Image 1 (cartoon, rainbow over the protein chains, first blue to last red):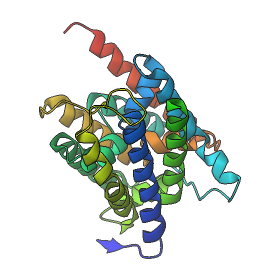
Image 2 (cartoon, each protein chain N blue to C red; image 1 turned 90 degrees about the vertical axis):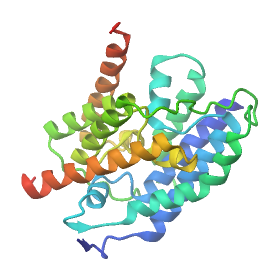
Image 3 (cartoon, chains in turn brown, cyan; image 1 turned 45 degrees about the horizontal axis):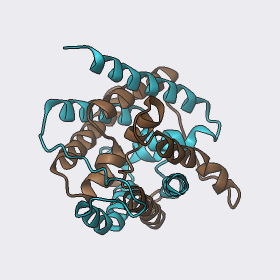
Image 4 (tube, one colour; image 1 turned 45 degrees about the vertical axis):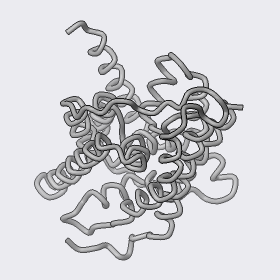
Length: 143
Length: 138
């Protein structure tokens, strides 16, 4: 393992994380909801209780880059994956997050902050799976 | 009021993702690439987020109502079951393949990256597939 010091951005990572944590804290304290994006998106699309506010949260998330652009240039977005990989990745992310009842935000941020054993296990699973997948992708297949 | 606070929380969440670098798929994959030139930044995103959310989440556990009224909707499930593990493993695989998870995908949608449209379409299909399979009486 070698750390890429050139691209390591500890302060913006911590500050961005703090904003994410603040957003999750506001949503739980004021609205009584977990800021799990896959769950909120499913709720907004499929209906049921609280559909309106779930949809409004998603709308806020969608509009964030436009607000950002009102003040500064958007940070770099580098997306090099092929169409096949993007399609497969999207399917796995969509199905897996619903089947596993959460994603990086619901389990990885809110669940860990709640000290939920289920979320801890889920986070360990998707982290391990992500590490292995990137290892195979980059160092076995050489994509 | 609840709608407004939900909207603002979504906006703030998205700004956090952008600032943190989570909305840059190449950076996410650089975090997941332990054997390459490893960029540990995203571990600090989780540290920052959890540090801020820890006390509010602990407080919420003891409440039956949210501050704006309505129930405190906390997950009640405790059992460690197969869907949790298999679903999370599949999710991690997809996350690794492209470096995108649901939050960043949505935060990137309106930036006009062509690949994001494809990813989101596939993600919605995956979610719909799950809903369909759930409806099947097993």
